[in-house]
Length: 616
Image (cartoon, rainbow, N blue to C red; front, side, top):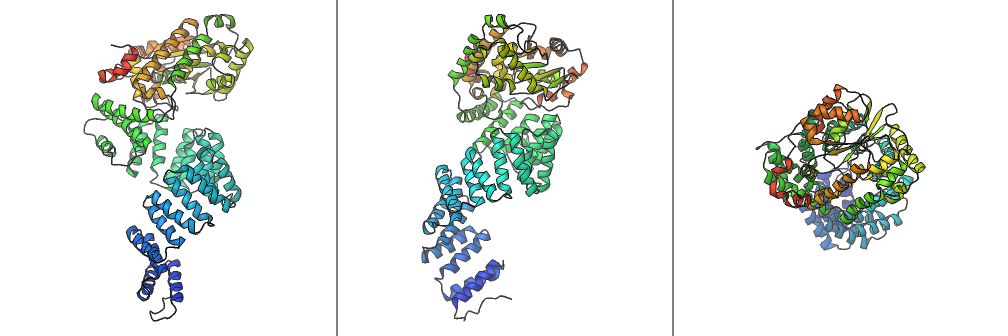
């Protein structure tokens, strides 16, 4: 049995070696006693002071650790190890700028140590000094080109440019699960979600108990609802307190129409820790009343003293706006919505002039003579049904009604048509296409959508922004049906303003005046389409008329699409299908009139919007 030498031992070096051996063996109480015995003989023994500090650090006594290591540095200021230990204390306390300073002093004393450069780079990254972090980590990679962790860390710092670093890490260590996960997450974030499946599955083959890998796999858009829920369950087996997996499961259940199950998941997620994003999702599926504990919990979380990310605070203000709106307090609701939108708008780039000019260019490019000369020359397929208009105008409701018909496949918001136009150039190059060019464009679109529904008589595409492309749609697919979803202008706009949309698209919806000007330009373009498109293919459906006469409007929509009556279309809220839009929860309920005239709750607070819409 190893034991400290008696205090009378003349060999201080040997006694220190015994103390270190106890420390490495995990016999920490005995190691501490041994270090203290040495310091009784030699109070200036810097290495014993340092390692007593390390023991305190390992036990979580940060102040004691800092005191011991500071004493060691006072006696031997030239030790890189001491500075590294001080850096670790600061890092664990979240004081990243201090940590970076300590790690830098260590590296000045030991510049050849690649691992030290990695520690310094990660601290600089955490402190928000990205340029310096990348330079430091490149130095670490140069010193240790075969170090997989060094390449992996550099990839994390480089963000979108980190794929090559992750691949080099995997060349050095094919079994480094973290690098597989990081590569998969990067590809998913870049929209290459199908490619992301490969590294994420490899990571799980290496570490099947890694909760983060299961969660990342489930969070890919390419995974269907069943696979997504299975990945969430696997995540929770690995880590029952993984709140993000419970949140993702809740979102997935909303998409499938299981609102009660979603609420249970959100509440379990919140039990793991308060999270603004989860409160925002919960707010979409419950109705608040004055005095609700959920409302009180959100107000506590909104305290400026509570540290939240920028995205978290935005989500929380949207949730509080929804809660106070449910309670009928328009003033408080609007205040939270205004703050949420102000913060969100500050994060987004938006060229209003270019956006509004684009709509004018579309009107000029797709003039009436163009349609007269190319009528009926596109692909003859009658399968596509395009549902378009402003977001939050009722398009999801129309699609859900159609998708309840046995001959219809609900395609959701498909990016296919804008992508095909982007390959040609829009609007002028597309408008200049000859007849066979339009036929090829239509055929390419049909080939894409047919893969998801080979036997369906009709396939819906409810990307709202296709209102920009209605003319090109008709020329490419003259037998396709186009349904313009309309709603009261002020209600449409306030519904946009009170919605936190996914990603960074729709930047014009986060400022009332910009939103009003955008709506006016959209309305002018729709007047143009109304004038040049044949009534046989172009139908306009008003949300308010749908509320007043659901059966009559449903029959009208089905007739326009050449479909027989089916009573299932009136029970659309019972149809089991995935709905991945901001209206996913609403279409799981029967038609209700509560959203008609909603803008009046906010009255004069909407002045910038109402002025642009020319509403007195």
